[in-house]
Length: 354
Image 1 (cartoon, rainbow, N blue to C red):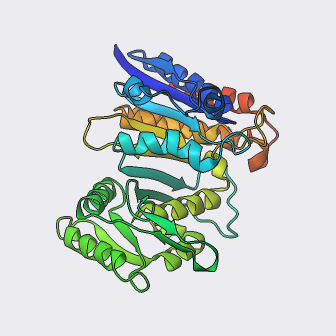
Image 2: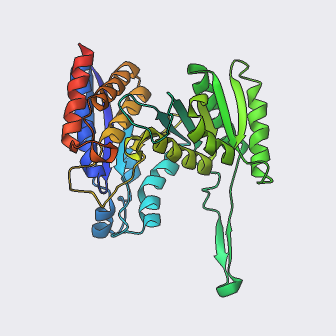
Image 3: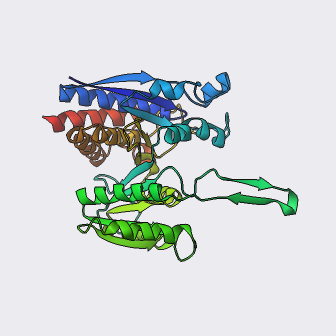
């Protein structure tokens, strides 16, 4: 029996609704598999936890989850309780940074049964590989003076190590997929970091002669996501550019509510963390209408990472079958509730396994 320890952090808002639904799907996977068991440890860390304890997680929180095989996160943030920069820094970003989750992976795929807002959508299947530890989101900088003399400096940090490892990860995924890797750059406007990014990309390209490479400026590449997404395979990008492109990817799929993500640790010292892109959406929490697809697809990515790609593939097929049947939440044109969508995914999963 293969037993996997999963640290479950529902977090805030609809995370508390969609995470239990995705766990039901994982339990169905374990039942179908027969030789797989999930050992869940639940952690109530959230903005409500902060109000009660003055911190987003306990002092030994990272130690508590460090021995898990993976972390399954719902959403972080409720600005009515805690400012976003406090909640994110105290939980989500803390886990990403302390557990050296240096790669963020987000797929954008034209799912069967989804309606894209693009007028002439063609099948697209993009994997966005985002640097997750430095770049434009470095916390180096500061503010000085006040009034009209106030000065704000925010430094972007790009290291040879950080840039190389995200690109190598992108090349390796490209080898497994369509054999094409596009680099997001802006070297015609950002004078130091982006030419350096391009240099490393060109240097590493020589090690992967079987991968077709291309560099596109971020403004043009953003347009290509809308006008010709079917021409893109794997896209590697800096922290900021990857963040923006992945939201565009979610939009052209039809809803940010279905988009998954993984924060990947490469050295094996700490667990990786899997979370949907959609956030906590506190305005719809408690209504039973949250879309569970993003969290369920995130579970699929976690299964792939944990060495169960066949079960992960079954989950994605079940998601698509459910969507094709028109069983959808309101954000994507349906009238089903959260539980009904999950029930349909589980039923389809069991049919696919027979």
